[in-house]
Amino acid sequence: MREPTREQGLAIYRMMQLIRRFEERVAECFAGGEIPGFIHLSVGQEAPPAAVCALLGPDDLVGATHRGHGQCLAKGAPPDRMMAELFGRATGTCRGKGGSMHLCDMAHGVLGTNGVVGASLPIAVGTALASRVRGSGQVTAAFFGDGAANTGAAHEALNLASVWELPVVFVCENNLYAEFTPQSVHTKAGSIAQRAGAYGMRGVRVDGNDVPAVFAAAAEAVELARGGRGPTLIEAMTYRFRGHHEGDPMAYRQKAELEEWRAKDPLPRFRGWLGERGWLTDAERARLEAEVQAEVNAATEFARQSPWPAPEAALEGVYA
Ligand SMILES: Cc1ncc(C[n+]2csc(CCOP(=O)(O)OP(=O)(O)O)c2C)c(N)n1
Image 1 (cartoon, rainbow, N blue to C red):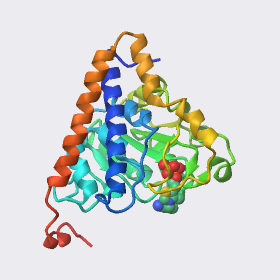
Image 2: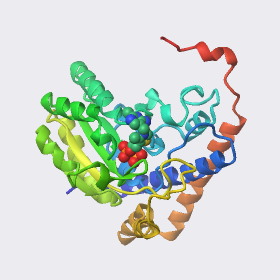
Image 3: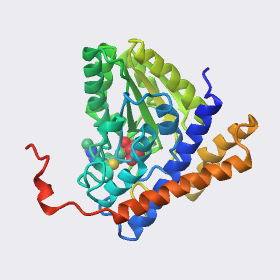
């Protein structure tokens, strides 16, 4: 079982902090009316993107979800340009035209967050096929939710990726809910990972709030994909602490369940793991967290100071 090195562990912890602080700031700015549209936060689900993307290189690709800020940050999209995108400003990664649900940054291998549930899987199959044809050695990681796992496109993508042994790592962040519907209501089979067998690919279910567990599963999956030995389906069991979207009163779930999962918060858990190894002292932690907060503050100011897109820019980049 491959474990993160000290350097990787600290980088993963830093990234988890960045995702958490970035999204907490997004929640504040959305509530204050600075961010338009719909916002879906992944607070509580930081471990899978941080651990999986720590194993990817700059040329590798990531397909993200509608809950995809963490996945984009972890792949290396710059927080200031991401925040500007969420604010709808001209300096955003998509010049303010994509927003939270259609945020793309090809310069950093981010294929896009996606308002179409389940769309990350077929897109990933396409880029993986392109990588194969070009012989580029790139791996694509496709993130999606438990609800997305039930879409027709997801089944087709999993099947085709397996048949063609494409270099994809499928990462299902199973947060137990699809919008307001618990998994027990929309899925009869207990696990999504077990479906992998039906497609003839490897499937593994891990504790998605346990960084070393996600890292170990992803390390093997990335290595196999890169070596031409086909895709893996990883099901990471996790939980979102906030509503489906900002403003959701969460009437559909029990307080006790939320508290049970809060006790499994991946940040303190991984901090404990690093601490046990003597890799993160209190002083180092304070310094790292202050740096991250400063980065998020700077990103917010960058977004606030950035210009709005010019009205005539509305027709630029329109191909239809
Ligand atoms: C193709 C499609 N069907 C339905 C929707 C409406 N919708 C938005 S989010 C969502 C639930 C997705 O659940 P899941 O994949 O588990 O992701 P999570 O929100 O839990 O992260 C649905 C059904 C949509 N956006 N796209």
